[in-house]
Image 1: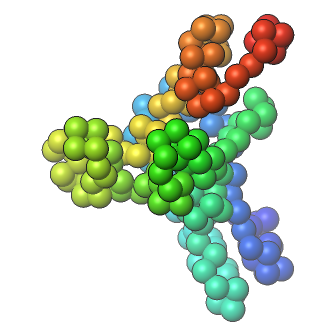
Image 2: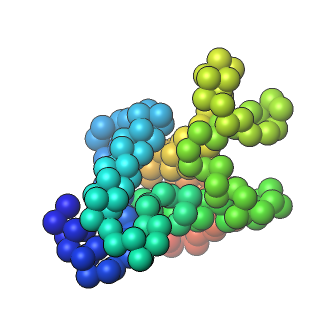
Length: 175
């Protein structure tokens, strides 16, 4: 809070790194929606401070993962990503526009696999059992990846990564 206020006084445009994401998977074992709500509350609480202390001449400084000014990661495990990272991966795999996709990976955007389209109505999504885009396309794949790494399931790890075009040498896998 203090560092953020000081940076705003010095007219530094903020970005947010939501760290310790590994804890959501390994220690807290948060289900996807609980994790999303936790991350959302973090972003909202930072935005309250920004709104309180910002200089209007700096323009809109509100943070949102779909704006590219929020990223997620684990400093301890040395990895991180933005929603753009995942949008680029999926866009390349499914031949779609990553800029359009990144906006679907945050907020009230729910994937309807049956209709192969997005739904933005939370009530309809709940009634139909649809999953939030962030949960389905970001959190769950990362959760599976972390579980495969933690359990030492090299075959599952290689299978998941090859789905995104990532290949490792035998020597890298052994490390």
